[in-house]
Image: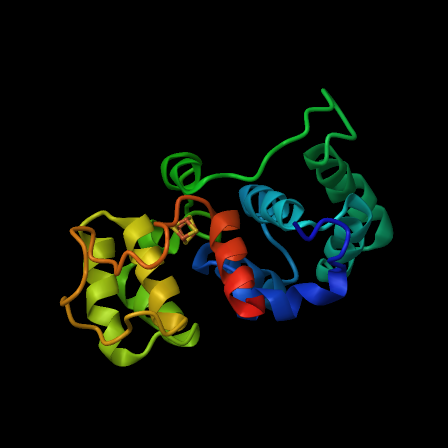
Length: 204
Ligand code: SF4
C-alpha cells in the first residue's frame, strides 16, 4: 500500500511504531552490530520489500546500515543478494516476504542469529526483556509469556499487538475468545499483516 513512498530514512521511525517483534528485533540487532547474517538479511529484507521499500531505497538502507564495510565489500558480498530478493538477479524470481509459519518452521536460528520469531525462539527471560523494551507493561507479560511457552507464537504476537495498541490490555482473561485474544483484530499470520494493521490503525 505504501509502495514507493517509503525511503531508507523512514525505517527507524516505522520500526519503532509499526514493526512486529521479529522485525523490530532484527532492526535493533542491525543497528547495534551494523550487520546481520544471511537468514536475518533475507527475513528482514523481504519484509522491508513487502512494506514498500523499493530496490533503490533498499540498497541505500543496507549500504548505510553495514557502515563498517567498504563499498567494495558491500558490492561484492551483499548488493547481489538484495537485488536478488527483488528479482533482478539469478532466476529473477520476485521473492515474497516470509509468513509467520515459514519463519517459525524453517531456518531455525542458532547462536549469533537474529532471525526467527521471538515468541518461538527466545528464552523466556530474553523474550520478557524484549517485550518490555517494546512497551508491553508488566501486567501484560505473564499472559504473553504463557502463550509463547504453550507454543502459540502467533496468538502471543496478536496479544502484544492488542496490548501495545490499547485494545483489551487489562491483562485479565475476561472477554477473550478461546485463543486468548479479544477478537478485535485478526490473528497475526504474517509480519507484513502486523505492519499493515498497525499502520492503518494509526492513520484511521
Ligand atoms: Fe513475527 Fe509472526 Fe512471530 Fe509475530 S508471530 S513475531 S509477526 S514471526
